[in-house]
Every structure is written in structure tokens, then in C-alpha cells.
Length: 400
Image (cartoon, rainbow, N blue to C red; front, side):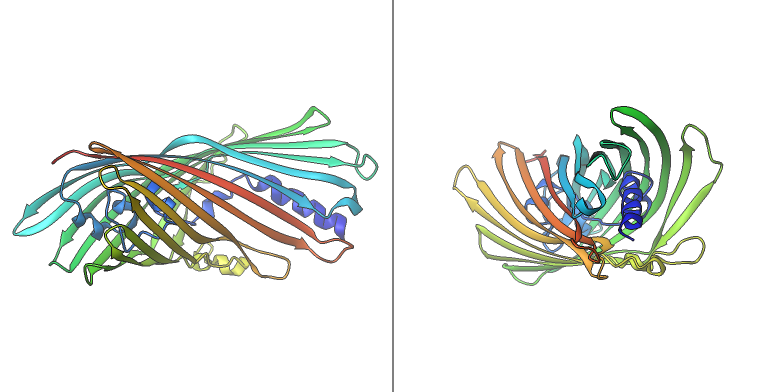
């Protein structure tokens, strides 16, 4: 039984860099500042990244503004508890190079007596880029090899061209809308080496398209408290597998349908220097429907709802240095052997500095989790992973 389970684990692990991202809906907005705040930004949304968080927050901007964000990540993990079947070490290493993540431009204007802020962003909504290496070492008796290395590399993701509009209704309320026009591609290749000799190679390519409409509201209940919400309307994600191992499989375009997602958040400013924020993010991905009519719930896929909290304190008078701390839960959309949902805890921190009309921000996220894969043998089979994400951003104010 344990040997059969091991076979399944190897197949699953080998497929993690395959076309698994079709069902990736673990979405947060973009931005280095929001990352430092633990992605608790829906009720704050007071910079150009509001396009991705809550377009109603754009009305808080009073001059032309542009922003750009880049991001990178690294991870390492181990599979433990397999010595009884002959595996002495199973190490996993993953990384993505620093790459473009978000850019935006916003312009405030008045129309018919209404204060309006319009903008457009190019954003990486779902980043699939990852270089993954798995090294499996054995005792040389239970397997016909001493070392197996599984390498895979995925490039690309789902991008969006995102025109956005925020409208101030009165001093308390504002509304906004963002149209995320999806585009992008996912290209992957993988190989297996056994004792230093190439055993197999595979590749694939997938194209994506679709449209996600976000509607946001923001209420400034007082000088200290703001409340916001964003609804992503039900939408379709279209994908076409255009290449498998150098050949077009001729499968045509397929569609998966997602239900409504929403975020709600609050920002609390007890002093001019202190911001405390919290978000709840509802993503019922178990309700995603396939073309066959089945849903992900039929495959025991759990929802990926998450909680986020963050704090920002501004140090200094002339030169302002923000200190940001946060925490959020990151459900992975998988379960352990006891059918419990696997949720990673993520600690965040960030800072920045203003240099004239340019604000530079940086953040780091530290994540970790453990998944129990089997508990029927002499030792539990577990997978333990730790991740680090680094986000850098710049905001340029283009007016007085």
C-alpha cells in the first residue's frame, strides 16, 4: 500500500509544474505596499494599485499618478517519512526570477459636477512562473536507481489589461469599476534524469482569455474609519492547450466558469501616523464549473477563503519612513490525509521612502505549511514547505 501511495505522490509531484494552473484562482491584488500590509487593502485602497483592489478608492487620488511593481519568489520543501520504502531524501527547490507584476496610470478629472478618477493598469493577475527541481535519493536496494532529478520550468501567467473608473458620490461614499480583460499564456517543460542520464522530456503551452468585472464601493464613515468591498462578478476563463510535446493536440478552446468572488475590508486610522487594516477574501472555488457540468466540489476541492490583517506606522517628520507588518492565511486548495484543508500562514513586512515625487516601497512575505500525505505506516508521510516572496514597487506623482 505504501509503495502504491509513493507512486501516486511521485505522479502528483511531477504534475505540479504541468498544466495545473488552469484552476488557479488564489487571487490577491497587486502592489508592494499592500503586500507589506498582509494584503489587507480593500478598505484602504488609497494609491494607484486601487485598480486591482477596490476601484472606488481611486477617488482618494488628487493628482496624476503612475506606479510599477516587480516580484520574485523562492521556496524549498521536503517529503519525509519514506525511509521504510527506500527513499532516504526527497528535496524540493523552487524559484522565480524577478519579473514585472503591475503598472498603472491614473488621472483625476471632473464631469457633470462629479469628481472622477480614471485609470488603466497592466497587471499579472495569476503568476505561474516557477522553476522547480525535485531530487529523490534512495538506498539503492528498493529502487533501480540511486538518484532521480525531476526538473520543470513554467513561464507566463494570466495578465489583464484593466481600465478602471472611480466616482465620488459624496464626501462619504464612492463607487468604482474595473474591467480585467484577460490575456496571457503558460509555457512549461519538464525532464527526468536518473543517475545523471536523461530519461524523459515533456513540454506544453496554454493560451488564456476572458473578462472579469470588479465592482467596488468605499465608505469613509469618519476621519478614522473607512470600509470597502469589491465584488468580482461571475465570469468565464477560456483556455486552449496549443501544444503538447511539440504537437498541437487539436482540442480547441475550453471554458471553466467561476462564481462570484468578493472582498470586504476596513481601515482604521487612530492617529495620522498609524493605519490598522483587515480584510476577508471569499473565493468559493469549489463552485467552479467545468464544461462537463461537474464542479470542483465533485473532486473534493475546498474553497480558498482567507483572512488578512496589516499595520502601517509612519516614522519621521520631513523624511517619512513607513513600517509595515501583516499576516494572512493562504489556503492552498488541497486537503491532508484526514480531509482537513491545508492552509499556509504568511507573515509580511515592508517599508519605503519618499524621494521627491517618487515613493519606493519594498515588502517580504514568509510562508510555511505542512501537509500529511499518509499516516498508515510506521511513519507519517509529510510534505513541508517554506516560501519567501519579495515585492518592489515605485509610485510616481505627476502633479503638485
